[in-house]
Amino acid sequence: MDGILLVGHGSLMAHANDSLYEMAEEMKRRKSIDVVEVAFLDQCEPDIPTAILTCVKKGVTRLHMVPYFLSKGYLMRKAVRIAKEEEANFRGMTIRVSEPVGADPRIVQVLLDRIDEGLTK
Image (tube, rainbow, N blue to C red; front, side):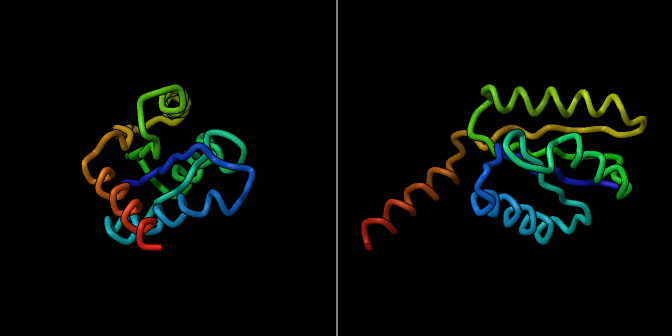
């Protein structure tokens, strides 16, 4: 069974984490995948190992980890390292890691839209 793990940095302010949960729900709706979990690198739970264990308990054997980061910097490397360590703990589980968001032209458009919204207020 396939699953998605959306990974973000995390914040001590709970409302700051809400957008990641909203993104996960939208991913679940659009991809018709039963298991979509959220994990955080720092500050809050669930962390990556806990979220991976949740996926395993739900029957996931192929996990697609989607880092919600802009670049392949420190946070991305840390998330990949943790995921690979966890993958070794579960026989039959594979974890594929997507590229970070990066400088995708679609993100540029979102940023330009935000500028336009700000100018009209």
